[in-house]
Length: 207
Image 1 (cartoon, helix red, strand yellow):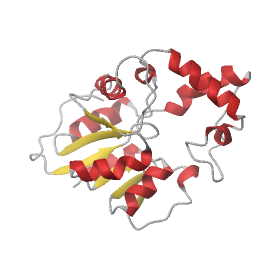
Image 2 (tube, helix red, strand yellow; image 1 turned 60 degrees about the horizontal axis):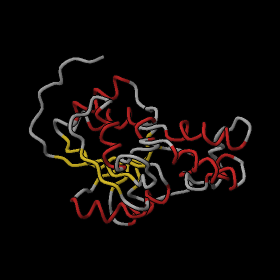
Image 3 (tube, one colour; image 1 turned 45 degrees about the vertical axis):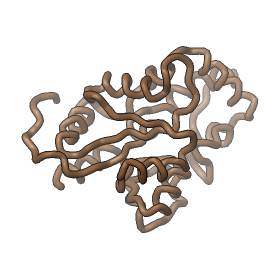
Image 4 (cartoon, helix red, strand yellow; image 1 turned 180 degrees about the vertical axis):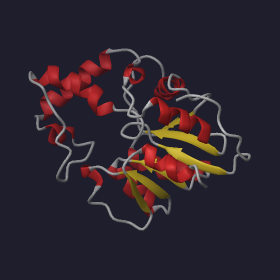
């Protein structure tokens, strides 16, 4: 429920957020293209050793269908602005209020793009979910995120992609990790598992 944010102290914390798999349900959106390419409904397996980059394994289809789905995705201008949200309206409002205290930076590996640049599409998408003037950076690969965090002085990150989580943790960055079957094989002192952004907000709001 929207209202007024509680008055907080000036910004004293900095945190980085991934987008897909954290606040955006890219898998649900992209599955529509894969369904058409595969000729039948598909559901993410999200188990075993599959990672979010191993899409043919994740959905149990061949790579030809995956490539065909990407081609269709690429035909639609500004596709990243169409991805559904993983958060409730209340969670978005809480996140907006949290930004009174936390300096939030969005770091995504969204590389494929038709239309506006990926960072601009992502910023517009975030603005559509109550966030004002979001700061967005894109990297080429998930494993490139530690370098961007170091550049920006970010020591805490929220992510789900196993390659990103591992690279961030190895770089000494605390990673609040959205717990999913595809990243449960990872173990590291810097990895803090959470069920979702709502649980993260419960933690951060009391700091």
